[in-house]
Amino acid sequence: MREAEPLRHGVPLPLPLPSAAAATPLAQSRLLLALEAILEPLVTVLSLWLLVWLVEGELTPSWLIASIVAFALAFPGRSLLRSPPDRVVVSTLLAWGWIAGLLLAMGFATGHIYDFSATVVVNWLWFAPVSQLLSHWALRTAAPHLVRLQGPPLRAVVVGMNEQGCSLADRLAAASYAGIELVGFFDDRTPDRQHGADRHRLLGRVTDIATFVKANRVQLIYLSLPMASQPRIKDLLDALKDTTASVYFVPDMFVTDLIQGRTDTVCGLPVISVCETPFRGPAGLLKRSSDLVLATLILILLSPFMLAIAVAVKLSSPGPVIFKQRRYGLDGQEIVVYKFRSMIVTEDGSQIKQAHKNDSRVTRLGAFLRKTSMDELPQFINVLQGRMSIVGPRPHAVAHNELYRPLIKSYMVRHKVKPGITGWAQVNGFRGETQSLEKMEGRIRCDLDYLRNWSLRLDLLIILKTVRLVFRDTAAY
Image (cartoon, rainbow, N blue to C red; front, top):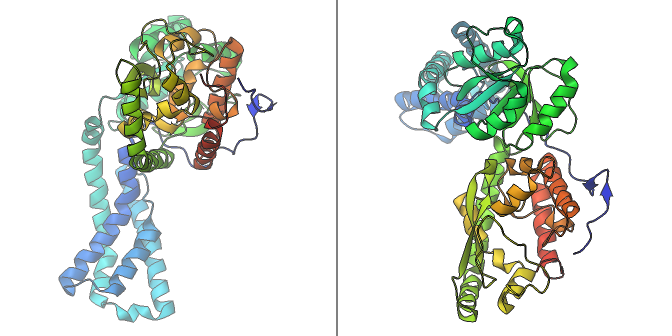
């Protein structure tokens, strides 16, 4: 196997810096965030169009230009779902006053104000903010129903039944649009030292949390522990790295070795992300869009070639053309991954032996397909299905996951993102068979570096490196 490129402090080559994009509030669904971002700009423009249609009967190019400018000034809309009604009114009026003032100033400064109907302009000054307030009220009314339509709520637990932890629990209970179900608390202190024990459910001791999280599919963990508990926090974080739950600190405190560490809020309360996916909000949309575009183009271009491979596989040896194997995907959920069959066996049990040099199970055609990674081409269908991404940590067989997860620290963290057809580990010497625990640890280290430093530029770099690598690498058997 080709050796990895030189490491610097455990990181293979300098990686791009993490994105500085603002964090997404976790206690609010992505749909609501998108709706709030577009709500005010859209209502501002639609209210103008309605008045123009009523007064003039047609939308002229001048009004279209004015609409574009108004939309740009109002975008993105403000998040006001958590705000009290009086604050929503004041905030909306102040924001609209600023936008209207800028538009009027630009109109008078350029002289174009006289190109527009005074009736429309005057009525828009009061009709736009009224429309915005009505839209905020409508969204606030519909928000709980929209959250329920997106599926079951995320299950969460709080570690530390103290004042801060109970404050978070109370806010979650009061936020009907949060999309989070609080299961309960974990705490080691005696009942007389627990804050809010009369109204909140105690699930067990801190040492029980990792087992509980894995058994009950808990997705969110909030650590409300004091700074004096730092050694205990470190042990707890190590235990939680064998899960796929997102971990946050309440309140603010310093932590090392973060995976996409960032500040965030839950119902207005500050928290810190310790272990989180990089694909939230706009980054997630960018990642999925690039996957869909690239996977579609590749499948269209290579479909005749893939058909020829399928025929060759069928004629070269008995057995199915497509080999299906269970792997771990996003959040540790089992998925089915497709490959062109390259062996005389189709193993998918509790024990799977990795392919090695001169492996008798590999067919002559399969050896060529594996060496050039052409056996992975059907996985672009997995990308379109949403099970995989083009770039990400390579999915391991379920049997291999269960073997390595207790042996390698942070092994399961790599499942915070969708598995990829290629990845940072594969272009840094960890492609093919991993003959030792150290090799697998190197692969996992690369996967975690990818999570910390993801960018679209890094994805494109990995794709280019992969294309160059498959024609000259000897690590894949």
